[in-house]
Image 1 (cartoon, rainbow, N blue to C red):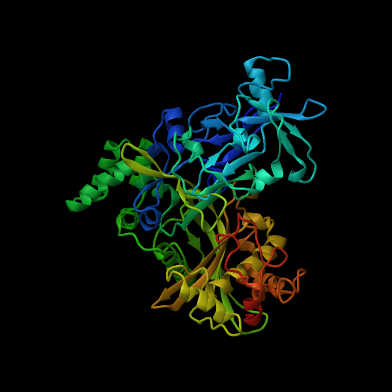
Image 2 (tube, rainbow, N blue to C red):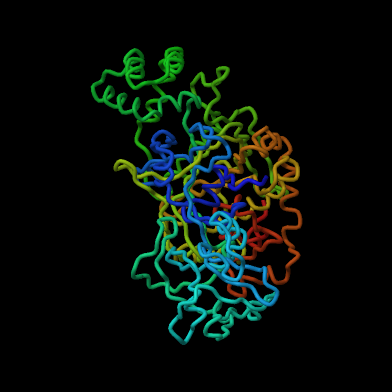
Length: 580
């Protein structure tokens, strides 16, 4: 018997789905409701599933907090019990059980030209036959296609609640929709290409408003289109010097607020911490762990958790870059006993394993460091529809008891950090100036079009492919994080982190960091034939035609799960003119 639900991993929820997304299930497509509906449904509170990362919360989320997506196992529900509330969507279906035409009908009514069935059979049939077209606008709204208005373009819609669908094949212009009462055929291809008035429906919230005030035109799109919902994601690498278990214990909001009071009163010590942990309801085993942990290590962890967090558009990344560079020179963690058995650190770089690798052209020498342990927190702040750059961002935040929350996920993995030590990256050639001009015309804090960022970003995509050959991970499982730090418009640091935190099949078994010892080979393979592309001369001449840079699926584009910037800010020619 086939299942009637769809399993979604928490990481998939953040990167691909989320509130307002259409999920294809065996019983038909549905739209996920907003996150507050989930916690109401399971009768739990977001703080039960809080992800502690104050640096990300204060640096990128305006002080708001992060909640992970609860799983069935966490709340004691059977695996086959759907826990996330949804709407059936779209609500129109296309019955193909008629020889001369198909019937477009509302699911609740069932196909009027088929024998009458029970309600559960109507829902099951409607889910299988759900129409594959919806309407959306750049303001983030999503709704059904206005089939009644479409079938009556020049007249007032009659009372008919179903329509006949003629034709098909490879072109929408061959499809005709006809009202069985009015008998006026309408080309669906023409309707598909025109603009419609937006209903201002935000699908995850339920019904559409009675009157629409949206000024954006709606267009008909396929419900499976990649641009129907584009997630906006922020991520942060945890750079704290403490074991993972100690971080989880001290990050408890109830305990941390009590510790804050002790700090203000200058009463914080080992015994007072243990007393407050018991009052906060910390489990006895965890209290014993705190008692066994040296006070010097616990105090260092508390100082980091309670310390001032960086603020500003690039403060989170700048702090990460500084910590990575510090780890390369001094190792990480620093000055703790975090490597006790059963207590792995959140962030680990072994100084003895760091290598220097000279580029194939002998112009640059990279420092290559294996990050054997890392924690990455990923938060979905919202989504756009249709236009990834200009579409309005619809927030996925929700409120609970006066606190604003965002959905997120934390994952552990490994990575390789690459930088140039203190050697400045000087770019030459005719491609550096256009990128510099674009950066100067844009927002000063947006470094995606800075030529140094473009160079590292382009190199990153070549390395993603090369690493996947030997690491055992697919290229889609390896992610990038490009760092460029500026002061007064001067680059003072840059680098690249390639990492994997994929759960399950592509787990972190050391396949990535093991390649540090063979990184010369990886780098050589990455830059092999970089001066050519199977789409040349179209690819290399793309900048002459108005494109930002020379990049395409054959030479530089990476999977959307790997690239933080949706394949923007890439230029193969800039890399060719400045080979390391």
